[in-house]
Image 1: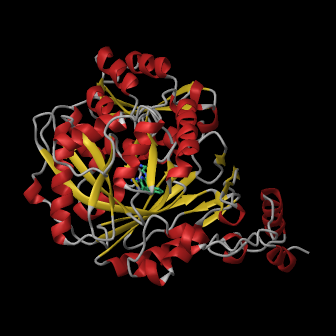
Image 2 (image 1 turned 180 degrees about the vertical axis):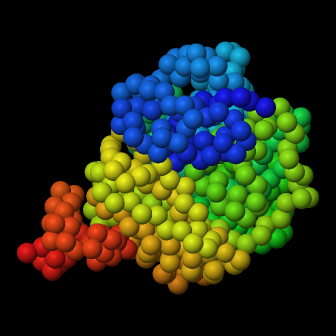
Length: 497
Ligand code: MV4
């Protein structure tokens, strides 16, 4: 087993990995930037190393510095978390070449899945259903037009080098095609330095369903069932759950078998996720593979009792999977809410500032994965995720009840959060009935756009300070329980003379 692991990440995921290291008796080494000198991950790690200024390019995305540091401190392995270097084949190759173990898949697997057209070809060859469309970039406008006529509109133009929704364009008819094609090419070139575009049939009102897979370096593969992540806004996931309320036993058998085929097709090892779109008739289509641990991995851990990070480390060290497929069963239901520092009533603009107060929910069925502490400064340098609230119950209904209760227990002051917005979703009948797709948030228009009554962040903090100075209870729900509308002028009038 490894003696020391360098964690090339920050925030809640760094904390998650530190916890796994401690449980395994492995020394955890964190890196931190200026902005993170008082972060929870910096505090909790056995060793913490300053890596550079706050901007990600000088810190968490500084390849040479991180690999050199790992060598200097004699780390046996590097865990990349998610984001940053986690799916960067060049970084992974550099780690491999340095003799340090990368806790994740091989650089080859990552490279294979990095090209979206390459991945589609590989899936087609291995009998994993793909969305009808091209498996090569389209050469020119005329060839593309002919193809679209064959499969029928609407179509979606996607960048071969893309992923995660960047550089996609929907085309509803032939006369829209040329402009959309040119624009997609330009966008792809700007974003990825490669203007290869391919075409897919546009799937109407699909659901986003993904399968967690895991494999060791000895050729053993297993899946850990599916997660549904359809509740999202502009490709930012908000709520994830496992299992999916839409997937029946037969569909589950089929989609998980397809996922295992996908993992085998790229000689995968470690933890990965196969993303699918599922249409109304439960037909599913491969979208892409995420060759990393994902943000929403805890819901899978809750329903399977498998510790994915522990397993990742063990696999990287050369051990076999600690379980077999037949040992796994779905028990209960788990839902994750992502708590963001953002302003739902102001077009979800980021909310920055010091966490004047940060109190987490707990109690039965509640897990919080977070890198936040009171006093932490939420800046624009990094992802505005404050914490992940994972609720687990015997049934989906129970998990929702626990979620609604736990959301109300959060007390966060200093930044505006999406907690009230999340609560609104959990109060919706169609969410309760599992009746939703990827367009849910947009269609619902949960946000009243009466953004005229906004307090700026400074006004909010000033009001909060004033209320504290007036000796009101610091943990008074009326003041800063994000479950209430705290940032309206009405509030100000009532509480701020
Ligand atoms: C699609 C699609 C509809 N039809 N492909 C967005 C992210 C990227 N991974 C693929 N995406 C989509 N591909 C076809 N042929 C709709 C989406 C999509 C989406 C997918 C998953 C989760 C959220 C989404 C939000 C908007 C669009």
